[in-house]
Length: 456
Image (cartoon, rainbow, N blue to C red; front, side):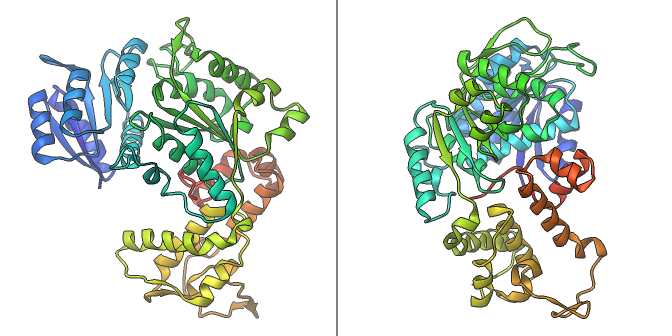
């Protein structure tokens, strides 16, 4: 359970924020004065994140942020303010705030910012100078994965732009995190954006922010992801889905490191290290005219290709064992490993969903297993290869809702369709005769997109 410190001189506001976090399963401790906040960190810490008002009586919120971090190094702090201007946001973020939220703070924005801050704090290794800690989450002995580790070590110290290519689920997000954690920017924000999951009409505002009144629904200034990542790393996933207009805007900001929020004439300068990823080879998109050649050359400074899991099946045992230890621990179960025949089946499966699919398979097996060893019966039919006999499975029937019984077949159909269409969501939705929104919801529910945290 995440523990969050809330500092606001208005006890009612602090209490409301605490109730929102508590309803989301977090533990919240409130303070209305700077001295109380510092005492809480000293006596009741450590905390996973803090939410701090910018204007406190007798103390500037940014000064308090510095004092909090002096007592708990690396504490992610989300700054909130009733004076939510772009200037205030820039000042807060450049002094190390994890995020900046204008008041009144909506529940969704608060939870999103706090969860992101907690995740950012959890990613920081205890030894900040140890590259091995930063790269330890990338598991694999395949020569291409070892080459990937070498490239990460080589490019991490610089601010060189990196372009990763690989199918969805291969681990691009994890590699991007590793680059950030092994870099001198490790103590600054890591911000991730899945360009393919954000409607084109909202992507510009999401990346560059907007000012109040810029368009219908813009009730307050909003900082964009580029500014949120100032001093740190911005990971743009599925860059291949960006429109021609957005590609042009990205080219400018990558070249000049400056932009204007939507509806504003004020130019904002940022110091951001950009890592990008595509689930399709961009060379083909450039040749077809759907991706700008000048942007491709601008972002393809260092290229990293991550192979699909079916091409490195020798890594499956190590990955499966790692995932089992994680999920068994979360479930409080003592599961020591896999039966030989179960592991053999895992190493023969082709994994259209790549490492993410293997993680889901292992999690399912850990949930269902009633013994200290994962057996064949704990694996999905698609993996074990068991067939139906006279309409009934060879294994004993376990009563379950129809929705659960249809989950695996539906997931397989979606994965195959996505791969056949080069992971183009619109073409896949059209082929399956469903709308794009329904496809996204099904992908999320079936763990194909998950929380955008690839594993490798």
